[in-house]
Image 1 (tube, rainbow, N blue to C red):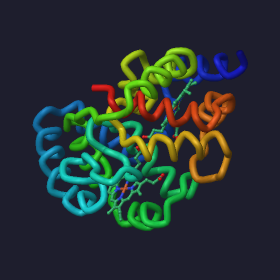
Image 2: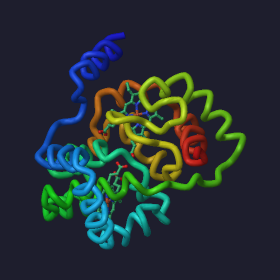
Image 3: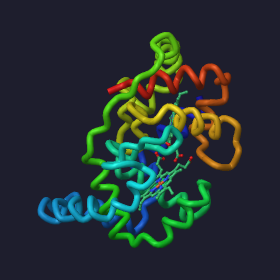
Image 4: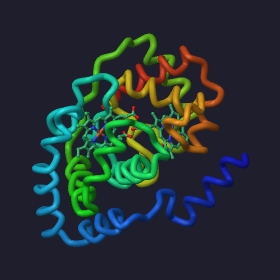
Length: 205
Ligand code: HEC
Ligand code: HEC
C-alpha cells in the first residue's frame, strides 16, 4: 500500500525520471517536427557504434544485451543518467556514456524509440505461467501489453536472458540495478518465476 501511495505521488508530480539537460533537449526536439526529423536521422548515424553490441537498429543478437529498439526515450535517457552517476553498473556503458554529449543522447534515444522490435520465440508452457505472474504483479506499471509508458520501460520483445538477469538484480539488491519500486515488485519472486516471466515477456509483440 505504501508503495502504491508513493507511486501515485510521483505520477501526480509528473516526474518519475529526473530531468537532465538531455531530457530538456529531447522535449524541445519533440515539440519541433522538422528538428525532430533531423535529430532522428542524426541518431541513426550516431548509433552505428552502439550496433556493435545492441545490434543493427537496436535489435540485439546477444541474449544478455538489451534491445534498445521500441524503448521509450525517457526511460533510455534515465538509464544513461544512471550509468553516468554509477547508480547503475556496467563497466563498458559507464565509460561510454561519459563521452556522449547531451545532443547525442537525445538523438540516439529518439532514433531507437522509432524502430519496431520483433517478438522472440519462447517455451509456451513457461510463457503461460509467466503471464499469470505478470498479470498479478506487474501490469499496473508496465501495462497489459507490457509496452510500458512514459515512466515505465517497455518489456515486450526484450531479450530473454537480459530480462532474467535484470529482474534478478533488482530482487537481490546486488547494486547493479537500483530502483525502489522494482525491488518491492520483485521481492516475492522465486528463481523459476523469473524464468517464466522472461519467457512470457520476450515473445510478446
Ligand atoms: C561493448 C558493448 C556495448 C556497446 C558498444 C554499447 N552498449 Fe549499451 N549496453 C551494453 C550492455 C551489456 C548493457 C546491459 C547492461 C546490464 O546488464 O545492465 C547495455 C545497456 C544499455 C542501456 C540500458 C537499456 C535498458 O533496457 O535498460 C542503454 C540505454 C544503452 N546501453 C545505450 C547504448 C548506446 C546509446 C550505445 C552507443 C552510443 C551503446 N549502448 C553501446 C553494452 C554495450
Ligand atoms: C510499481 C511499479 C512497477 C511494478 C509493479 C513493476 N515494475 Fe518493473 N520497472 C518499474 C520501473 C520504474 C522501472 C525502471 C527502473 C530503473 O530505472 O531501473 C522498471 C524496470 C523493469 C525492468 C528493466 C527493463 C530494462 O529494459 O532494463 C524489468 C525487466 C522489469 N521492470 C520487470 C518487471 C516485472 C517482471 C514486474 C512484475 C514482477 C515488474 N517489473 C513490476 C516499475 C515497476
